[in-house]
Length: 132
Length: 365
Image (tube, rainbow over all chains, first blue to last red; front, side, top):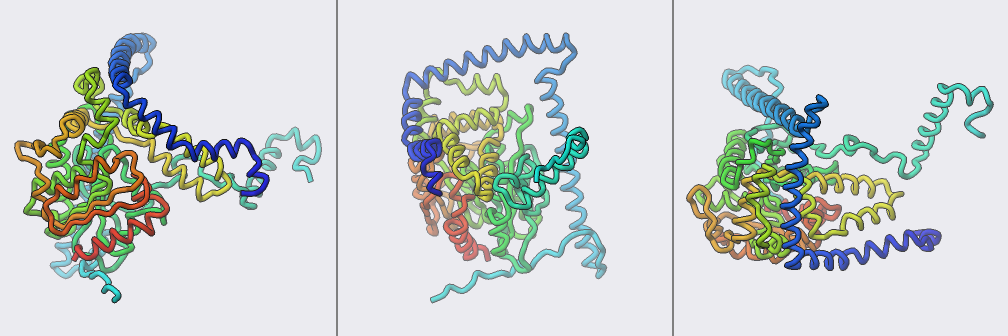
């Protein structure tokens, strides 16, 4: 750190924050572990879920009237894309398996086809002997 | 010399564009700190080690990494990630990758990485994750490698899943088991225990409403364990903004830290009811499809690595693990570091990775 940096009050404040963060965090975590906080958080979560449901239902109707997709529509689309991705994954896995089969078959009949399958390394490695 | 010489130049937008472009290029060429930093997520380029998808079922994705040596150890290594975390933390960048390190040492590495569950996958629970998905991936590794046994390495909750599978299948095919920062004692997760045993907390209602528990929710719960850590990290970033390597590493870590996966509703239910509230791994009451999960039945070589400054899985949540496992060849290492820096931090290459390699090498033939 240059001399100029060491005199920078903002930098000094940041360094103090980094150094004292752990004890501040511990105090906050302890506070959050309090019975009343836990109870309040549970209640807040239920209220938030209830508000979310009411708001989502009202908003979905409003968006439908405006002919704009809602979050549920976007999630539907995301699920459909994920299905397509899954199918592509299955095809990729299947192709990999077929390629390996083909390489094995060809090897057993003495042919070396170009299937794109890389030569597998030998599984004969041993750990290096320990130095005395 | 000023970049814009005359008034005519100032009026021509194309000339201005060219001048500005040249100035920026020159600034980058002079290596002015900060200008060569990645500006978008894709520029961060995480997970650079070449891999191929081997198996895919529900939320499980099994990848095989391209070996980097001509001769490898006989027993393949399967890394099981935590269902809430993305696997690229173990392959952040070249030179900062556990995967790359293991490949360089001659291990054959597979990874079970999880994808975000779709809404209909909220029915997936602990039984499906352990028996069908981890089990399915192990079978796929055996079939792909042509071997009859496998070494499991579980990270965090991935360690829980791996240990449960091994306990349910003591006759194989797991040959060795390694778990990093794995919680087994729900009472040790003090803050979560307080929240989840509060009468106003209702996991069933939460799952019924949300289906899957969103990644943001998981992220907030993790951040609550050390609420100001992220702000402190931002301060650290500002203090080191002229160090490009520091900034890049920070951005990669930060991206991962907020990139949590949603959890299927039923799995979340099991984690809350069976692990945190019921503490069934400690009481020995946990059952999956009618079979009791008893860690004493694990008799393969076992290594547990814990982090000294882990605030996510504190010692109170993981220290019982080693005593519960029945293996005669078992070892626990507690190392300096936090939950993530233990496996992926800058010092992991000197601390954890060489010890892990030595342990695996001896048992991987």
